[in-house]
Image (cartoon, rainbow, N blue to C red; front, side):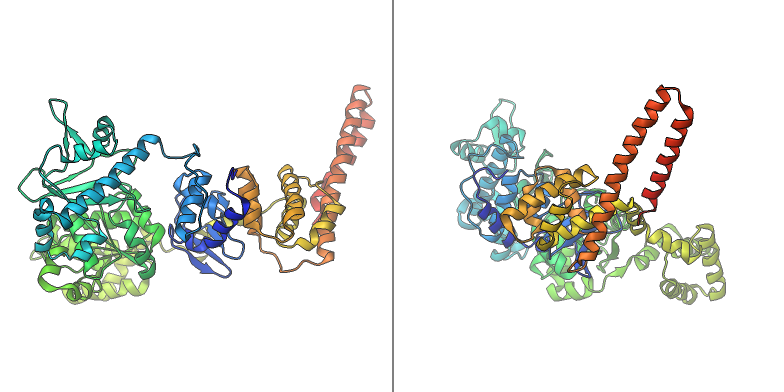
Length: 604
């Protein structure tokens, strides 16, 4: 697997990349006991079933079964080859790798690699023009007029494309890039005379990066009245705007640290907010929030603050975005912007501190926002509309599980519209009964804990099967029992996968002596075996196993083996008796088989 990378180097890379830190850059992990749990990034779920153990440096999802070590995780998450995953991890911690450029095993096509390379060159070119040349002075002045500092310009690699139609085309041609590919990627536009021109000429440039910080597209804003005002790169295999968020690569560490993300509508809002100290800021890319983006945020954080323009369109977009985020399992707040202002304007007028404290920290709960949002559909000076409005609010409040939160907002309605608390409470009760939300707590708890119940159901295996799993779990963590198990049963496990794992374990301990599940997993070439090993390694075991416990497991495994062999022999004798037309003998043998099968089931 490693080809020309030595096992020592691979080990250095793995040991320098703590699995909790690496996976924590992709999903929000919360410690429970000795392990960490989060939402699985490989399948949709709302209840965390993805477990990471720092002690063993492995992960396993009890929902979809994915499992492995830190290299396996990167390969699965990024759809990388082994060498690509190894390089990403080595670069992350500064471990030197041998030159792997000769390796052909790569997940990214040659075409996409060329597009990424060209995008990186253009990013540097446009940024250099903006910061250090006369050609970029117009764009530089635009950002200065918007209050953007040089430091912020550098952080976001902001740039300017001069209004010269073949400037970028000629630059990239000299770098060896083919015009046809650049047009296909949307980095250049094709004129009617089949000549190439700069797609973004005369615009300030916002590089759009993926979660790894690689430029995959560009956004351009006109500063001279061109249409359209904003222009993005076209969608491609590398750039799907409904699946990424602007500035996510820089914001994710701040999102994890602050346990919340702030969602904006555009580039400048994010950049202004970042400069104002709100660094957990991301934005959609000229479109409404998508389910994919909502799920991405939920993997990283529980709470999302929506900070859209405080006009009618922004309010409508905030409501729709909040619905998607709540559906994904997020706790949603709405930034407290002044009416008809956008975030960038607010910062310019009132300053960074006011934005942080009066807008972000003073965010409205979704319920508060929703009660305000609903008012646009009613004329509250009319009695009929007031009643309809109150009923609509009550219908929503009935869905809130917290009785304290419900009562808080019921008092607001009581104060504002002079409706008795008894009436309001009774109406809420009626709504909850209709929605089936007032069933007994036992059933509710059963539903809440469905994931863990499913896990226990999966473990209702035959006694010998559990005995083999438990014994292998101890073998993975305790080298001292290997000789005894190998001598007593060798590879005579009853489950084929367990036989293979045992064979590999004996070979592993011959070479390594000390237990290390993460290293052992690296030896396995079969992904299903890797997943099974990580699943078994997650089984809770004592720090040390007694001889008595080992002997019990071995006895159960041997008994299954012995009885299976006996049953097989009896079945052959039964077949012969039936062929010899001896029904009495065949029936007697059948009774013996049934009795042995009962004994197998009764083994604990």
